[in-house]
Length: 140
Length: 121
Image (cartoon, rainbow over all chains, first blue to last red; front, side, top):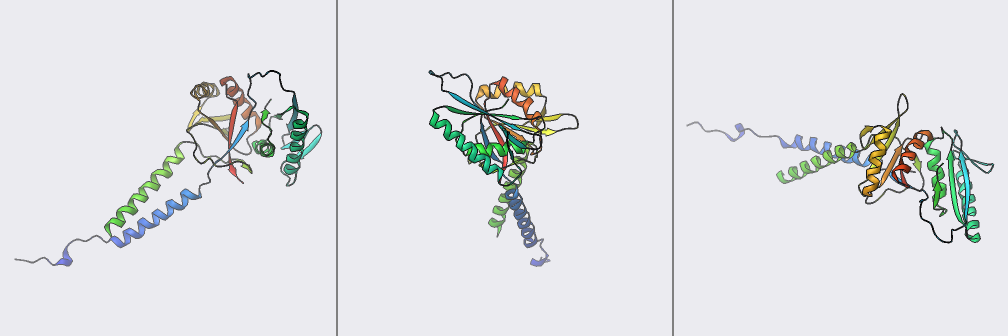
């Protein structure tokens, strides 16, 4: 009777397979964490329909955004691409909010972008507004 | 050795499925950069509208599906009745007129609170 030697039996080489699987694992782990996660920027649009008695006084300011992404607030211009201008706009907005608070009126911003104003400019403007505590934003 | 391979395989399958599933819900898009936006820790299920610039006009996506503006209005109305939040996604160069048409539909659907998708600075 022929005896079968142990070395003849089929054997799976697992060491290279583990190498390969580990490489795939590392690849998927890095690619999944490299993918940038999306952040939320809430835009507190003013809610319509709720009437309080007495109606609070409203101080509405209009901020226009040009096609080049420049904000025009009653004649003062803020270039949102420039480094310091968003900070300048934010401090102006904060001063506006404080003035409204001391006068007892509600600050309302009406953002009026021109047709080709880039989305990035609107987002930067919302960034400036979000630190001030102004809660009513209207779009035209 | 065998249990380790089992475990590694499980991890591998997990990451493969998760990475493909995550891509299916929304079209790939470059987003504007925001300094104050935050990544939500536990986002509730919500309706996602993405806007892309097409060859003529703009292309609106509901989730991963291309829809017309009229259809989008109907879908948003249904979502607002169910109380589902709406997330708006658009590229940094997307002109305002693309949003204007969409926001008019939002108003008709009774949606006043908007959330824009951004990348953190």
